[in-house]
Length: 435
Image 1 (cartoon, helix red, strand yellow):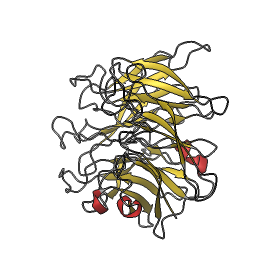
Image 2 (image 1 turned 90 degrees about the horizontal axis):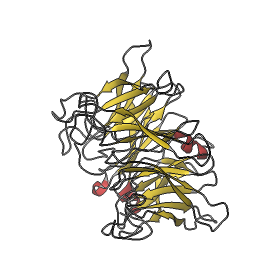
Image 3 (image 1 turned 30 degrees about the vertical axis):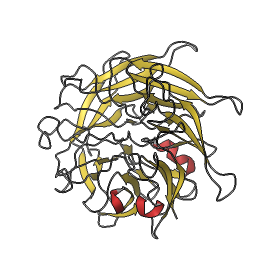
């Protein structure tokens, strides 16, 4: 299994729709790239943005950096990480403005917030941080008056869970759902990973409660869920595990799975887990990213490796896939490989994709392209059922200022897509790609 620290996946589709006034056009002509903000390694303003961006209704973007910020005794070497706001220029062609709206302290509130934030209709931000105390779920609320500080609130800490946590999902009544890479009661040494729920208090001012709603049991059941979750109209949750399932890729860890969790029929009952699909290597392996739904109920995602043999891991360079529900209840889901990434081009996608109104898919691959700095890609469906890729090489377009994009993209103003990159000349960057 790849040992780099990949990003937790893309933010929720509802966030993307904020800026989709007209459809994002397919890249008929070559797109242009711009660095909107350059982070500096070892800087209090943030370093190493692993997560994707989210947007508010006013056109501001929010994200996290895993490092930078406070360099205290808890995080002296790399910094504890920050949450930032990126505001558009007041005049066309001006500079974007970055503001640190929260800097983590370490032991008291966690550190290394690597995942994508979740934003609600009131502009509150939700996310997770890790630390010696376990996984902390937090809320960051905007100030009531301009110039005041954002309010940070620790909602719940899972002291028994460890490792990275997937992006949070919020349901209609305010419950938050997430995943942990390690932990739980499964027979995998450090635990096989979990799915957890954090629920708001019944009365204002009360304490939030947390519960593990599923423990992955062993590699055959699924191992290490990294991405976040998506929910269907009936309240079922869908996600991926990096390992587990078919053992043909790795005898100890497996090729990865797609799973469904069905909510209990009675309050306090157990969630029911269904294995929807187990990857086999030739069709993909190690799905790190959060899934997304289309309007027909199909699921889309990427795998970090797998596909035709090639690349350094000899398991293939990664795939983009579609998983379609059965025509009849109880039938098998159907996996379709939309695109096989290849050596010499983009490879090792860690992010999910986003879909425009025409069904074109956009995402990032963490490596490949000029100088092996990663790419932004568009996949377009064709009448014959195949998908065609167009790629945008970050290094070629932005001069090395942005490289190694772990996270996915978000639709931005003016038919653009915005993303983050962990590397480059400084400590990572926020970039824009569009006409």
